[in-house]
Image 1: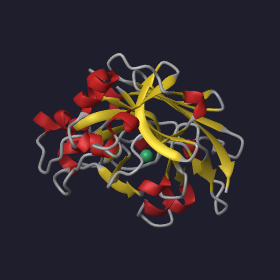
Image 2 (image 1 turned 180 degrees about the horizontal axis):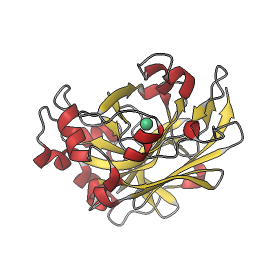
Image 3 (image 1 turned 180 degrees about the vertical axis):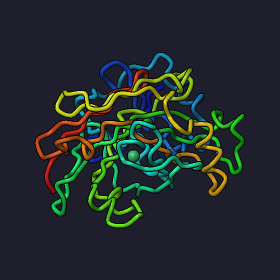
Image 4 (image 1 turned 90 degrees about the vertical axis):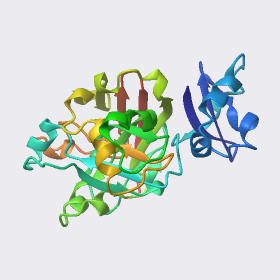
Length: 282
Ligand code: ZN
């Protein structure tokens, strides 16, 4: 299933993509499961799949505004410098442990919604990333069973305000500007992504390819990330982990290449989807 959260005429619901439309699961299951997070927390993806059997699309994709597929995670954990090419371009030393920072849920936008370049900076940079959404909760999760805790995958643009990211050694300000994180278009359930270690991630700015890497190149793979993160915090259904960006970020180009109003940024991951966001000024 490709689960989406959408707004139609001011009413928010959730559903599954079917062709160029959406089957409204909120209309069918909303009394039991208020949103995608509740559906995942109740381990009810099979029930959602059963509700789709023989269903036709209720609304056209063109008639809705897509929101982040999981708009209300309790936690968004971000992984820094998790591809060697990006580590080298940022001049950082190798680390024995993953770099983890956080993003607030209210910084996110869905597919098609605008990313906002803040008025306080012109250094608004793209970071194409694979996002994973936690299904089964857990603490001290071993690597051997880590993948069983993933409900699904999505594309993410971890839009980063570089000067604010580097005011100090803490990333938080530069990673938390309003409407700086693109997430979507859909949450693709794990059964549709048989090998998450063999995906190709491409970022484009105005159609020009600026990042390309395989998820096999992560320094800390999905199992290691889940094991490490669950070692310090309990992972709950709906928590999002964005797994780091490959080389090619705009800030390290010569000349630098930042996202500016009028631009269109895309993050495409094979088998997962294509996230597209226009960029506007605050
Ligand atoms: Zn990032």
